[in-house]
Length: 383
Length: 160
Image (tube, rainbow over all chains, first blue to last red; front, side, top):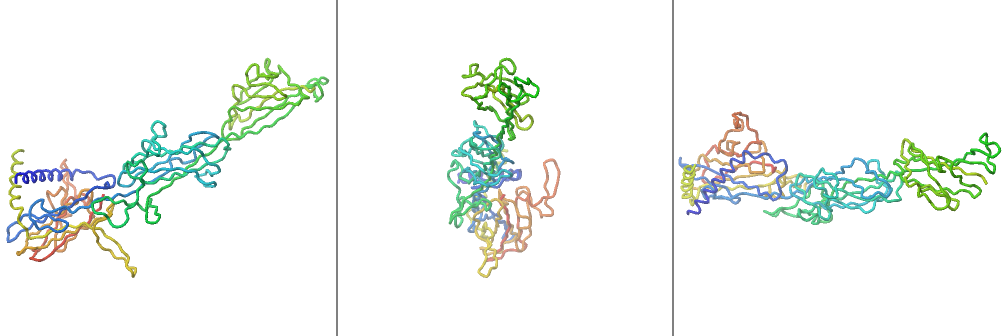
């Protein structure tokens, strides 16, 4: 008796507390979490012959035993709704240069269901011709990897990103960034495009993206959390319904595009001097190589080799000091010394086996856009 | 404070003493969902089935049936239902033949008709209560429930 009394007292106090908190409870911003038991119990009061009777609580099957707390709750369990969105955060293709490694595209998965999920995320190359915004797929990227960020906003950071094989749990109504990382092939040319598709499936919480959520078929199992796949993400194969969403992004290759023109001009000859010189034996001829970058990005470390006919002799000491090659790039002119044989002064310019090599230790950079023309000059005499 | 708890215990003790007695009304609450089926003739039929596949945003229909299983007429029959936690009342859905409808917006401490229900703020402000404020629904039977008679009340909630 004492124990029952005590229990009732606790119940009554709990009831009071509930009554108070129920009023103050704010409207939930998100759907009721899966697994929540929703209970209900009606109370009937009445009188017989003018005498108030003890109240009767309801039960799911019907209760007539009078007394507070003697009915039973009519309850059901909120089932699990699997629903989420997947979008690409990049509005245009990610720009990279040929051979550039670990280019990052960013996606966002947002859990719009009512339970915590992990996500199975896989990325793959799209077939040629697929278009992402204005980027047409012409090549494939290599070494594709998928990572999850720490939240829905932080940019990719190798220190905080988690591999897709360790997919984190994502609470309902929160988002996570997913990063697809890939390498552009070295052989890629300016204007080439590589588009990728990220495929995301919902998986159960704590399964690291491994246990794919599958809809519970057939009738509801009372008291258990059934899985319902929202129609927006549902994918059915036979009798098995799972979830899938895809989102595309792309990489655009920007490379320098170089064209070379070679012109020659007779500077002087032994007969006419510098006045209307003719290309006769003993004349000095200047070759000008004009390299134009019509690509989208700067060309770095431009070098070239130029075979010189054995009827010509490369002149020394033609430009500033002992230099014999003039290089103008990015609006600045500098010189190097192409000595015969090995590159004695290690400046990257030398003349060996009738071939002039210009590969300066301070690399030649040809920008795109303004100043996109570099010129290299050297002089020879006609034997 | 100690005194009031003691008093409460005393009150509950007397209630416990009466607990064993069988009352005159059998009260049953069921939670159901509407199911739309299309018959062979193509006609769409809406039926109620036990609440299954309950997800946020779905409607749950509560039906309370109360039957007089005693030998005497039951008077002043009042059925009070909470709007369950995690659900909200669907405006205008409460329905009970031969009953007057009252609502509470303060956890069941006071009841009034929908038109008269007010919310008193902590700062003394007063405003009319809306369906989203309802915490309890009360059905007051206008007539007595004679032995053997069954009445019912129904209302809908949406799972938040």
